[in-house]
Length: 177
Image 1 (cartoon, rainbow, N blue to C red):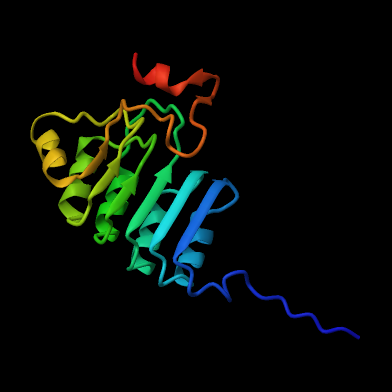
Image 2: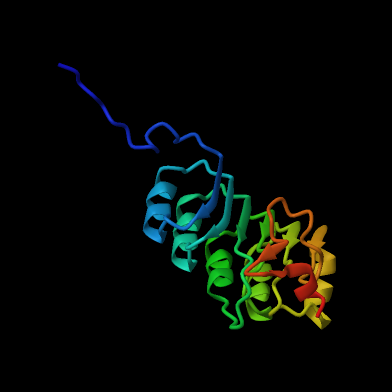
């Protein structure tokens, strides 16, 4: 007779400092929240193409107090604006130094909240964030605070994952129109 012990996948990862989730459509806000509780030392979180919402991000921010880098990318063309994710990041992740939000639907209001609440931010990637308009005071704030800034219409060719063709058209062509 054999005894089999099944460990929860996070039982051995309490020391994990970097987590990358790509095409994670099966990961829910609840699942990410449960994982975050087991990852108090997490410093970098990468989410590319998934169903995580502001609720999941809020819970990560509350549980992972050492988080310094967040890449939350879902570059799908969406017409409506929403600051939900940006506000969740602003309210719960004040220690961020690096933030990448390729394809986010936030507006200037969401970006301003991030600036107000994340004083250590040095690197900001806003490619394909077409509801953000870097003008006036916001443009000045970006140039003064951010050392490495990628603007909404900057090319995505070097972003590390394929945003070249999604939903049947070129993002770089779409961004320039």
